[in-house]
Image (cartoon, rainbow, N blue to C red; front, side, top):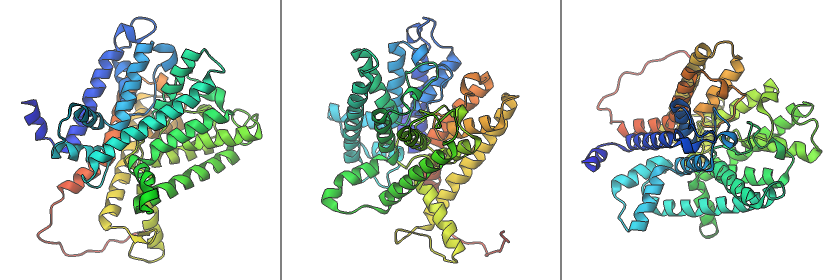
Length: 446
């Protein structure tokens, strides 16, 4: 009976339902007395907020992860991060492999939707490689971080911390166990921690489709337009962002000023990468200059790339819109990227995703100014963008949110993980061919 009901749901609805079930299960587990160090469990609202933040790989927290949760609670959060980052359908497919079951067309369509893959062709092979890439990245990162953390803590704790942070950052979640909302600020100048984390965040953020093409490049000797756009825009945003943060924060005594020259570069680099929806930080966010915070808001809004563990409008959407503006200014009809014409449907979809995102963030910010009176506007706006783009960075507002604010941010994180991209694909799939066209009309622009 359940299978028949699920078969009637289209892929976007299955994704929404699946993520919803995972969040509810996580909420129940985090509310158990064994999940918290005080033996009382989280309140249902705080448990719901934390479960949503973990499943939607956001990283916003109303209670400090390292101080509040037991090992059981932390492992529940880590499990939700892994499932939320890779997608519950990927894990369902893995289970089907293990049990020797055949993957149906319906299930392939849902996987295609969850990974934002253009076709169902090769989707099962991609899922298999997805787990191989994930295991390789998380194990390698976990080992490197464990070795470094072993210099500061007991070996068992170092291994646990190393692998927790490797999984969290590869999935662009940003949860950390350092305690007292300090994040990784103690390691701002540490090259091992910084470079390992930056690599994990970047790999998780470029998307599994891109990773698969890079893996096959030695045999194919070619990259698709999608991969070229993702790699080029990601590089521009990271290098440009790091350079601007370095310049803006160079004389700020609360961030970069007192660091060594190499520490300044590492701190700026990390803070340029983490807004790509990772959410961890080595610099104190509230101490950053307003100009830097605005830059970070811009980077958070763009986010990661399609088919990745991150959120935002995506790097490809940004690239298409910039190219469309460039073509319009030059008086050209066609929008091109790397010598290829971009189809009008992709431009339209990019505009749809961006406009929905802008409208949503403005609406969320407006409501938060009502539910959180007396709070600084930039702090509220920063929180709204961070939640919608599933980043997890905060200027300190999250722990102080009212009950209404927590509910709104929870809905925002869920919408950001599921919303714009899935909605755009749903619109595209439901589009029907027009049997007639209206007469053309002119509207003055600009």
